[in-house]
Length: 287
Image (cartoon, rainbow, N blue to C red):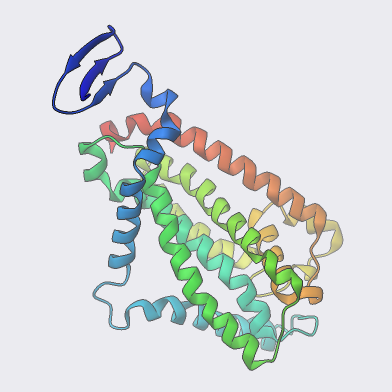
């Protein structure tokens, strides 16, 4: 039976389609609505993937060329000129094992932060759970991550470097990197709607973060007395986890710092979701 149900007065009206009008439905059924709009999520993700490298000369090859060139620069600067230790690991592999999560985090964080504003026309016209927009932005960068992973495979084959059983745990650290980018991205995406200053802050944070995170060097060079404080940067735990999984016994995982990173990622994610949900009701009015 197709019907219109108005739960505010309990009256049932018959019509040509089903519609439920319920006071407070958005709050009470938010996650159910999020699942109901999964097709929109897939559509936005696919759209962003298609337009990401549209009208570029080399197209999707950019997802390989960018991390490769960054790896070369970091290897020359930190490995050859800075003489940073690599614990017997070929320096390009040491760097690229960290570049994979960093590039994904940086790209997903930047895309998330501007996703709501860049979809202003869609948001101001129809209702849907706004969290779909930043979530779809993360998926695009996850695709880049998977493509870039091919470089790591080639490097390991070139240097005859074989991972051990820890490699099977790499998906767990990948999820951790995604949640870190999504948690921080939700905060900035919501703040960017009201304060457009954040669109200028994000590129600086990404650039600064590359140098303070252990991308071009191993975090083992940080003195022991500072390592816990250094782990306040949640990407330290993510990158160390990637190296631990890829490099096996040649890269240690500083457990106190890693646990701290997990706690911080959880707090960023929960706080980001709560703040985004609290403010998303005003997006259509002020965007």
